[in-house]
Length: 57
Image (cartoon, rainbow, N blue to C red; front, side, top):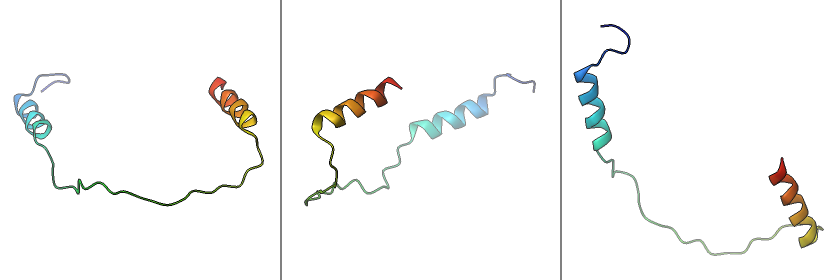
């Protein structure tokens, strides 16, 4: 078979693979409660300036 030739078996295999749904994973949602603290001396304006500079890059 040459490169790029249509392969019915491969097409069917991919269709079966893509049409199946794997529901074996844990779909429970977890709720986390707590507090977040961080150390930083920057003001809100300084942080926004830094964010804008990062977006421009």
